[in-house]
Image (cartoon, rainbow, N blue to C red; front, side, top):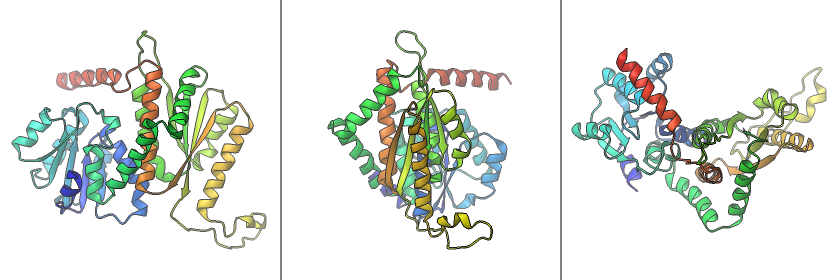
Length: 364
């Protein structure tokens, strides 16, 4: 595979992805999920916001002379991406030795890369940014830092084969999509309750995927949309769960669990004076504790009987598991859009804001 072959040639210790939205969120989701369970070859950083404090604080902690910059923009003219790239160019000479471009084959950024002899990886025109994690957008930086991209693709392929082969997964996801669309006026808010901090990146990616794909005007000029919310357990048990249990019945909940955390950290057998009633915690693995917390949340939601709740269990902390989860959500999003008679793959509401921004910047 071209990404693995190129990865073997990269000598720099730091990899900096410059991009925003679909150009970074999917990659970050996978990296966040796996990085603490892998001895990775290199460090991966993301420059994606125009917040000056964020840019400066990240740059201060990176040796720019030992960095490969991966500039990702499907259109090649993304304001945030080019603005940050300009700033980086003021700090270090970006050239064919330290800069790679990921873009469409006819973009202005592609032309810039060719003129400067930079390596270019193409984003297919028919792949939208938020669906692009299994293209050069995600596979290139992940391969360079040492993530097993073959295992990623295997996880996605398994879901694809199960779906298009109309196996059990096909029936389950079709049923879920139909329910979400048929009851979209009753349950307009879709909550993903992820019981692992490693899934924080997945939650962010899900919010973009769901919101930007399903918030549309349908073929009958009717406004459609399902509102995504991503929260982390057990932290948000102490905030958002109250709203779920006793608030308005306008939410569905999907709880995501990790069966094997690949970590044996335990609560020690420690006696604390005055807290003896909590000694039942002693010798319990933290992974067991968090999964029991997830089970308790599921049971409490189901006990009220009028909140739709389903559970997705990830086998473990591995490439195939996170890829399967993400590909499942790409399929679910596409199915919901099909049932809602909307185009999942465009974003006219976002495009209008980009046009307004460029006018404002040009006019000062």
